[in-house]
Image (cartoon, rainbow, N blue to C red; front, side, top):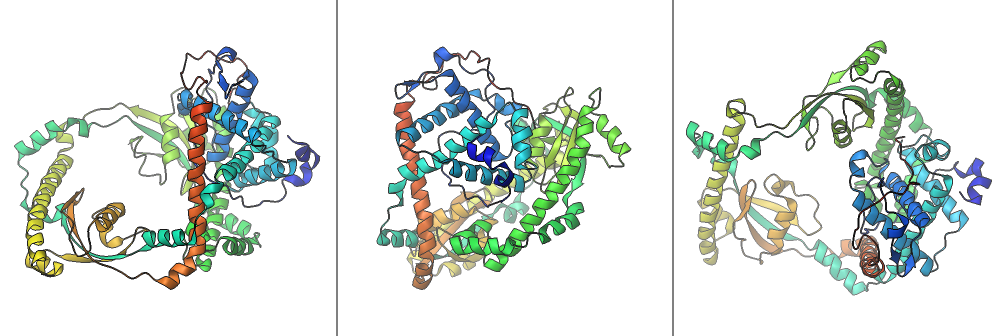
Amino acid sequence: MFGTFRKHQTWLWAIIITVIIFTFVIYFSPYSKLNSSPRGPANLGSINGEKISEQQYINARNEIYLRTFFSTGRWPDEEAKKEGGQVERGIYQWLLLIQEQERLGIHVSDDAAAQKAKEMLGLLQRAGVIPSAEVFLAQILPANGFKLDDFERFVRHDLGVQQLAATVGLDGELITPQELRDLYKRDNQEVATEAVFFSWSNYLAGVTASPSAVSQYYSNRLAVYRLPERVEVSYVRYDLTNYQAEANRELAGMTNLDQQIEEAYRREGTNFLRKVKAESLAEAKVKLRDDERKRFEMQAARKQAADFATPLFDMEPMRAENLKTLAKQKGLTVQVTAPFDSDYGPNEIPGAEDFTKKAFALTPDYPFAGPIVGLEGVYVIALDKKIPSEIPPLDQIQAQVVKDYERDQARGLAVKAGMAFYATLTNELAQGKPFASICLNAKLKPVSVPPVSLSTRDLPAVEDHVSLSQYKQFSFTTPIGRASPFQQTSDGGLIVYVKEKLPLDEAKMNASLPAFANYVRQNRQSEAFNEWFRKVAEKGLRDTPIAHPPPTPSLSSAPKAKKS
């Protein structure tokens, strides 16, 4: 990299600082693997009249690959490699952002780039993605086909994009005090509501499931009962709780953690509490300490899993049974999942998104994956078998089909009852009768719901029946003193009665306005940047292959990615 990096290598990585990354949405998502067949030099096009060289293309592609790693903590996988067009779009948009940095005279100093790199690597190290900055620079980078110069360019350009976003999004920060108060009132104005729910479970007793009706129901819904492709895997699990003592020792060594949390709270106030989902500074300290403990547990478990996986992957010939063989030698327990599909994953593994993805990528020739970090443990897995998609016969899933039939029929009864009651309700409300008494006279149970605003985050009184966003929509589109029309939901349906608009707490508003202003400015800055980028991309990228995609011959000098 940079002279600063090489000159001060001994101290550059010594300090770990919490990095605050400016977030914005751009029109590409660089998670796809670098296309192994990019375009030849003759087809690279131009951006705003400037021809793109083969080296510029390769450099930008390498930076997109690194950006993926630093954004997700993972190198793109083989599945993502299939989405080459998405990667190519990201490359050209990254080239456009680099060109715009140069046009606006945005230059990143050596010191700023070094500091940024230190923060980025520190973040990955604390998350357990890399063991250290030195290992990343000396081993992981070259192992994946990249040089220090690639990392330097990426850091400079990534920091430059942040400065670019701050520059072009400056107008988005402008907001008058009155506009701010109006926005706060819009988001926090509460209304008092009551509701009556028509849940399918209350009408289940009125349903009869005859064999012929169930059989017909099954025949009409064969596609619904088709089982997707499933896999079954063996695994060795390293429970995070087994490393609690070690994690507590590491945590005890973080003598300045409380000081860092207090400083973040002083800097960000209620925004900080919102980020960590805490009601107070004391609660934030407890939550963040728990997070740090979990991180240390994960690091220790991941190291043990890697020590097991390394010899496993080296065993010849490579066979799935090697997992059980090696586990037996080391006195470890091998468990087997029940068959699971790619949508829901294994019930035995909480937070199994990565587990599921890697399990479905296994083949008889490459039957192993890991270490895989989950919510409660770290796993090394082996493929047991793949089960093709099938439609089970009715006699195998009779109970499930009957249950589905009864639920659908009961929901139909609930909807019918709700629509009939709405006609009665509107007539009697017009006569001045109270909502609650009308419900009770109809032998329905009205629910008095806590005050709700557009910024309300949870509403347990209704969320068993309807989503919070739906309830807000019904509440704020119904006039005061009126009832909403009957609204169908997956549970059956409901009617919302809006009683009154509640007075706003002026003292609370005045205390919350500074943090709210910061939140609004950040959102507007992001929106301004996105709108700017849309316009410059429409013009600047019209002479590139992503505007009119041709066939894609290969660049022989493309780096080959390897898993770290």
